[in-house]
Amino acid sequence: MRSSDNETSGLLLSDNRSTQSSEINAPTGLSASSDPGRRRFLLQSASLAGLAVSVSGCTLFNTSSNTTLTDPAASGNIADPASIRLASSVKTETMGHQLLQLQQSPQMLPSQWRGHQVAMSPDGRYLVSVARRPGRQLLVQDLSTQRHWFVNANEGRHFYGHGIFSADGSLLYCPENDYDNAEGKIGIYSVHQGFKKLKEWSSYGTGPHQIAWLKHQGDTLLVVANGGIETHPDYPRIKLNLDIMQPNISYLNLEGQLADQATPPHHQLSLRHLDTSSDGRVWVGAQYQGEIYESPNLVYNHAPGESDLTAVKAEDALWPGLKAYIASVSCHSTADSVCVTAPRDNKVTFWQRSSGQMIRTMSLADCAGVCAHPILPVYYVSSGDGTLAAFDANNGDLLWQKQFEGIHWDNHLTWAS
Image (cartoon, rainbow, N blue to C red; front, side, top):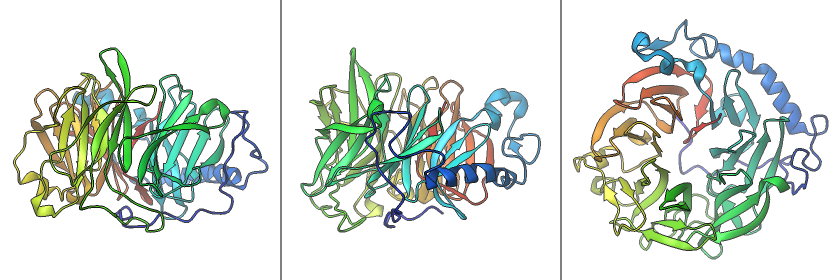
């Protein structure tokens, strides 16, 4: 089981440092020989052969032994675990919190704090682990050089665990908390200046969480899920304004101006996680802050210009059954589906994008992270108990699942290729 949402963030160790280097591939003061974190990374990478053996008792990507496929002949390449390219924040039982890159050979990098989402640059060069609220650091890994460094949040700010690169890869956008003023911000960082913070925008709400890009009528918009919950690092993980919270989805243009905004039907539906679909809509999952048995609909979609969020079609009893909590949302680029996880009820749900109807519900203990394969009709889902599973994006069938002993996946998965 992953750490509870009421757990405070891990302590930052003394060798975590920030850099504002102007040389992107040689951050100030860091080298393979001088950085103790770098030395730990090299040692841990060398030790991962042992970790690979512990996965279902077989080599990590060896599908010929101890890997269950539902229908290998019908599935073909989509059932091949060797094709995955994933990144995630994880907690290991022996080495603590790590940034995990899972490809042909797995690699881990110590963060010393709990990360949430991992962002990957469009050119595949950089992985950035973003600290979970109220964490104040980014862990940047340059895959071309295997150097890494930490970037600190500005004074009076902390991160919310999410970030996204610009399409050209020159900027990183991160939701942040101006906690003394209870205002959401979007921090903008220059990749070419060692991830130096350049400026920030308003998020037009409180508690900005996940962000995504949306193409709409020829324009590019940044979509922000403002959860509406006021927090302060002096009171870690405590929600300060549940009676008066005001969540929303905000659409920002490339100048940071508010282009549109929509609110949920109940003021305690905290909008946290979202994804954008190929048909120009935003799909968002909520976490209801009232009594679980009263939970309204938790999954909605929306497009700029629409006055209200559109709820998916499901029985009212579903939402209390899911414990009023949605963890991750992923839209497939080609399949007519959306995958939504509900870890508190151990459920993976599949929805038809075009109709909003439920396709299927599958059980998977403590499931939270989900991402879509960019081409193949597959969703990958991770679990706090160490499970990684692949599901058919058309019908929700389980294709395969593996157990990673000693690893606890955090709430989000990123396709890293």
